[in-house]
Length: 314
Image 1 (cartoon, rainbow, N blue to C red):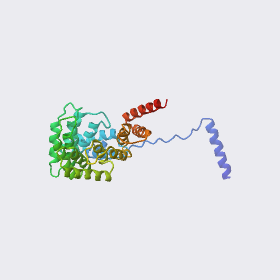
Image 2: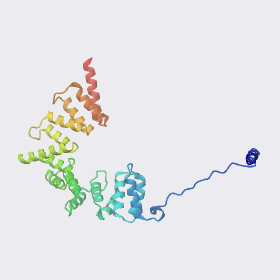
Image 3: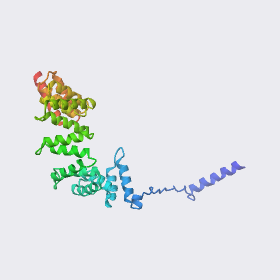
Image 4: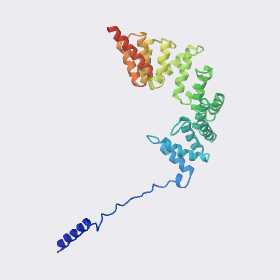
């Protein structure tokens, strides 16, 4: 009886559908509102800062989102928010470069004792593209940071770089002094630069040169990204005791395995010029590696060598 009743109900429902007397159930529309966040719903700048830092810390940072969030945090002159926002403006991340606005926001961050803001502000003051460039102001700011208690190792290193700028009147003595200070504070890159400057200086004593050479060799052995390229260049220029093109080539090839554009190209140059014994194809092979990593001049040299080799075979 139950089965017969069920079948009858199904027949009636099917007939009703066919006659248009019934319709299929309406789909349920889900309108889920995104989870509320204090940055948006309550306009809390501190919440904007936290969320901005979170999106910057992603494996693939969302610079445009971070820029909007951090601009809100900077509206209330939050030093950290302004520091991060200014860096985005300075480097054109998440939007166009705006050096004037970057200077304003980085100044807020620097006055709020954000070291990163001060370092970026000094870089901005020394930027050739900055219409309000003021290198003296940049040096003054870095000197204050380098002389602070505790001192900023990065400020000392950056100051050393400014005094050793080949595009301007340099002061090798001041550059060496600041790089030594940064090195003592733990900046390995500054140690490389201090050792290199010591070996290049004509006034450096033989004992100091040997100490600088050993320091540079030790850095190179610890990390090929630190000192190997500089050591190779010093061997090539004959600025180290017993320096030779052959040793320079060995070091350049070490660098080549980690920094193909620089190391492979320089090694290729030594081979091409015949400064060391090498098989004919080695320079081309090295130029090819550098070219594949975006070194345009290496691509040109490879093409020229290939044309010369083809002409020689005809």
